[in-house]
Length: 246
Image (cartoon, rainbow, N blue to C red):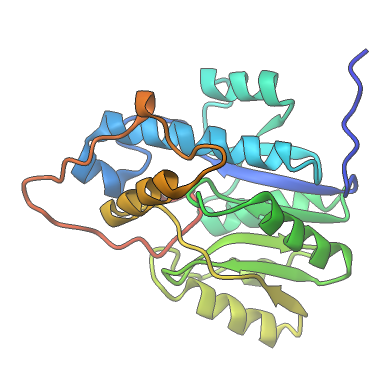
């Protein structure tokens, strides 16, 4: 019999939002510079690292919520190796999918902490601070992103108005979410602002952080993504941090 882990917050849940690693459908902004296949390699590593971080934190049971292809080999491998449950997202857009996932989770859990896969700066301590705030009674916790979105949202209650009519591809996501929370009179907590990985300069930043890191690894030479800008030299902004629209 497999021994169940001892979680610090067994009545909470960590939800990792992800997409199937299909060329042309993940890290599309970066793919314009490094190529679709390299973007897939990068995305797969980010996903593995994020799931490994969430599971390794020992904070709460982890669920992998995928947009499609729940039996994709990568998802099956993560479920087997990391003991995570794989669930299909439901909803017409990113907001509906996040709202549905949180609402469903809260039927059996005290809180849901939803994260994406685009933030290599996220740490177990960062997740722990979010869980601690939720466990202490904060209705919502936000992890702001430098680009105007958020890389984390946790909740003890879910109001669909937090996710409706939000321009997910703009830098107004965080601003509008704060305004909705205030209008709904929901107490919320904000964590430190982090950066996500969507642009070519973010990839350079990640590599620099990796070379400066003396413990663990962020990226290794066998899966390193080449920094080959496209001939156009164009760079696209990415205000959204969660990977449902990437």
